[in-house]
Image (cartoon, rainbow, N blue to C red; front, top):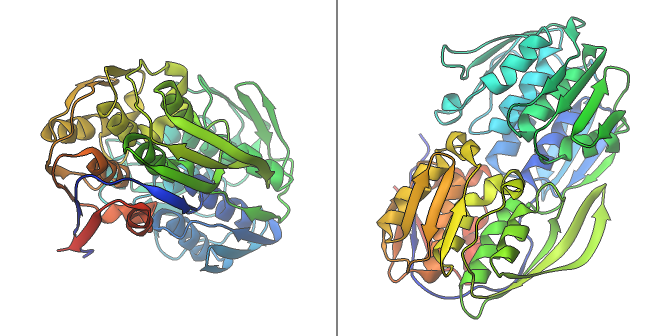
Length: 439
């Protein structure tokens, strides 16, 4: 059994210095998936060596792909081509990674073999019908539990998938990506139409591998006509991981932090836009394009934040950053109102309820709503909070310690290793007084 990890944060302090947070999780997943079915040898730099991305890597090794590394973020993938994957000898275990499970379900629906996808307790409770239902419209055969959750039993339907036009009921990059990957194995064209923009790493990376994909506003279209050609990928730092330090440096007086080589893909920068609307002082320095993805250094200094009504169009562009944005709202003057974020209730935890519970324990006036939260800026106290095994909750409450009046204890933090194993080390280097203990 994995050990239970508890974080203890001492109050106060500031963040100062410069650092490079680990590679982007979304792009690390996709580099393995597309590199594996490309022709030739793909080299990846900046790969995120965390449990979620490593679960994807292991799944493709289990399907016969030779992958060297990762070592210091470098991976070499010996692609087997679009039809070269082999049947795994056992179920593919994906740990805590919803991205792995949802994207692989699309990719594997069109193979010539059957697969079973399993995950840990948290992943086994997350909704999968959002991908299995549209895949069924394409002719896929995927059996789930009665409640629509993992394990997923996928019957390979090689040559029998049919392209569809799918109007997505919710904005989800995982659903979009799943269907585009399935579309590479389907007869005719597959088109996704999204209600609001979501991250477009799949589309950009497909283009980087030379696979034809057509984008027209909120529509993306793909077909089986094409192949992936091996390429070089330099994964930028993950803005979702950088977000903890963007908020920390904004709320702690005297802070001055530079975050190097951060991905600033416009489908991911909602957190910067929201913090700037609240009065944060964030500069984008040295913007450049690396491997088709925009990258920059982010410089942030402390400022007095103010409460805002978060614009709904920014919600999908910051969906993973809300746990720490709720901490920013607690430190702001006045009320912050979030709505249109119902998706937060089906993440690794119910992030609306779990953050509201924890903030209330710390004395913050936080009221959950069906699709968001109302937070009135309140001094952060001291106390013991539950992360419910959710990595982003654990890290968000750690950052709250910068403005707390006493120590904060955060339970069940072992899943920080799924996205950001270096969090404790980087945070303490920058000045957060964070210790962890195993039980």
